[in-house]
Image (cartoon, rainbow, N blue to C red):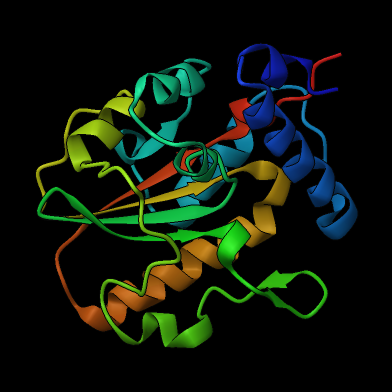
Length: 199
């Protein structure tokens, strides 16, 4: 079921971790398998949030390969393929990362992204501090993106298998940004390619 994903990752532990993540999603949240990148759904999201083509990034199959070339430990790498994430960069430095696997559950199927008054400050209190600094240039390279020019840059990584939860995270980040009344550049990063179901 996950043949394509497993074949592009040679690190066995890394592969098993991703497989566990996907299987967990099946039982906890309901798994909607996809046969290919859901471009129509991506277009709907871009229209909903008024995101232009330059700021709607669609991951390619080389993303995992590029991660493996970075000097990162296994936890850092695992965090970079979590399905729901928000990364905040200020003056080229990663200041905060919100990652689904660190967000406590809220009810049966929701994630509490705002736990511990996380959004009482800006940027929000980070779930995780990377052991190796992943600056804006490095992260942009992972996405095959030219380095953004704004001093505040936010990337929200999402995918269609958990579309409703993706929307919840996007809405929360945007609400927080609206309260701050600051200039920023926002990218939505679709990760469907990592979870395409191939027979």
